[in-house]
Length: 300
Image 1 (cartoon, helix red, strand yellow):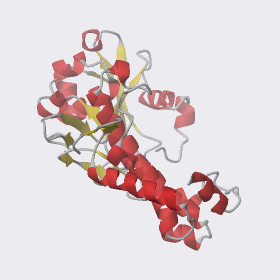
Image 2 (spheres, one colour):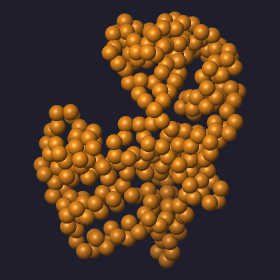
Image 3 (cartoon, one colour):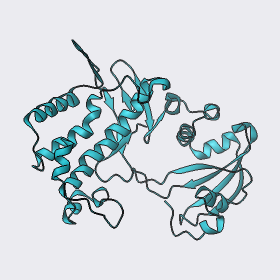
Image 4 (tube, helix red, strand yellow):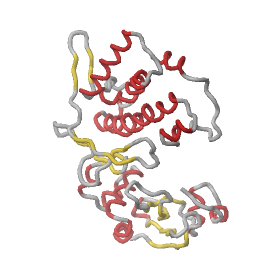
């Protein structure tokens, strides 16, 4: 089927942006701009489903269900059911709109894979029997930032983002898998014991930066207007030795991009303990000097 699609595709051509416009435009605008239909379908069906189902759901669920020693390519979870949707949908839509015609035997096989994706979770085919897992009872998502084709990521602010009927649960905030305590009982003590930077960030945002700064007794080093994000300020804090077990400083910034709910999230960046100027700290996070950062028109 891949060979049939390749034969039907027009010769690849270079786009001025360096990326096919289909990924950056709405389907209607892409077609209007003359992007080949096959490219539009690949971006809006295959790539969008891969980002939403394979990367945003399948990856964190398999990581949560399996010990780290078997979560790689040798994992026993090798048949994905609904999580194969991205390639099934890709081959299906190409035929539905008449771009390709598959052999009858391939069409029958594709229909079987589609039925599996609609009906089951992970499954294990054997010689005489097939073991099939139930799909999740609940999956909660939010729109993925920057997504143009309906891409989503796991998210629920108050309860598990994924729940199975047997009680197995997965918590996630804005696409980041987190332990249950981050949602149910975040505390400064648990935050300081957490070694994963992303989990720690989510937990701090959960209790609020103002509350965390007060409870953790962070000391303000300096503040300044953010040159790369007009209307927002930079706040540089010293982190006491006993908090993270090492000298550190945190730069509190406002995100340059708007979240799906319309807010601009505040987040903290760890910076070297010898930086005293907030603008220098912001520049360091981009690999720039403070003077270079101060001349930015807008950061993202």
